[in-house]
Length: 284
Ligand SMILES: [Zn+2]
Ligand SMILES: [Zn+2]
Image (cartoon, rainbow, N blue to C red; front, side):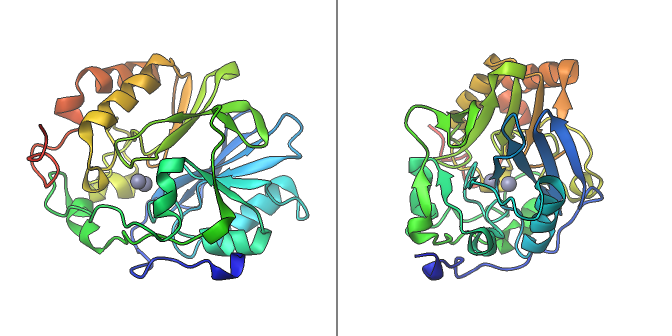
């Protein structure tokens, strides 16, 4: 029941923000992205714009802002059909309980992400010792306990389809989390990458605040499996996306995207993987 939903025990407001916070812009046909503090979420509609899905659920206490962008874009009486999650980190499910309560809609995520969305399993503790900067240092404060969405959360369909969005496929891109997914529209090669890679050095406070564009791997302080993460980035590069919006940072397109994504894929050890931190010594 939706009344049983609750956030993890360490759920809290995180004051980190960026100069892009509040921005709501069109990324491609029927796709908008919204920057909430330091994270991007997407609003994705079908051809007619009548049926739409929210991708990810922002930072803690941002439901009001998300609902008002949704109403401005799709009309007051036109809630989404569902919320699809790239993964369940706190900055992607920060307002999900209020949103599901408000809209009364189902949530979809990869099967391997469900334990983290049903209150069964906590994520890795963020790693403040990881190489990278002040956000990494602060990450010890970030919530890692799982939200519990009870029976409002369902596994994504096995056939790679995205509920309510015929043109889209989900792609399993694990590494950052076990059930991380990216969303892909072949027709115009549009990618919603989640945290599979980012376009800002998410560990660096100044870069995050100014949203400085810089191709990067997944946020280091929250990534336990670098080998899987590299495989996932290669998989996304091989799709040849024309434009991408990542969970953190500004969108990239065309040449800039293909050049940077290839550069990241081919130099993943140097660019993405930290030189030190809890999850690099463990690598075999
Ligand atoms: Zn994440
Ligand atoms: Zn994130």
